[in-house]
Length: 170
View 1: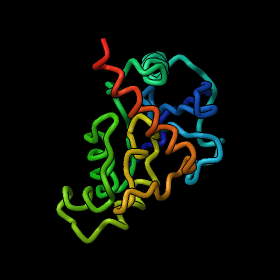
View 2 (view 1 turned 135 degrees about the vertical axis):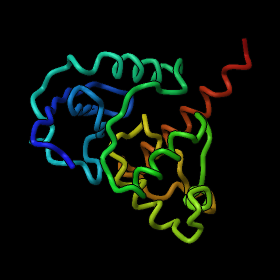
View 3 (view 1 turned 180 degrees about the vertical axis):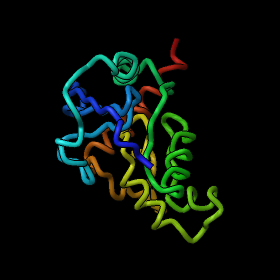
């Protein structure tokens, strides 16, 4: 469980998808939230504003948004139930520019009937973009639910798909 000694800090950066709030717990990234995101914790839980812990995170996010980085390599502090954490680990295996359905994730996790539970865990993902919950779609290819809004989800997926095809041109 959380000891009372965890030290939280946050900063806010601009992105093509609006401001992103980054949260660190003991100097490790524990949250990335868009404005008006569902399940966004209250601002007062984010700690003092201080960008020092976020250097590598900001560098990698900027490279990602410029289409230069397809895989993040950052220590993450993901707090959730064991099932949620197993879903979030699986999200990190979905390749850049790719998608999976909720049902496919449920199958991979050995719980083929749990696609709804996978969807709920996906919605509670505390580190958007880096843990790519935007790459999960409905069974018929619909862009169902996304905590950051369907417009952002569509834009993120379109961005990754277009950046992905640029490789072969040079």
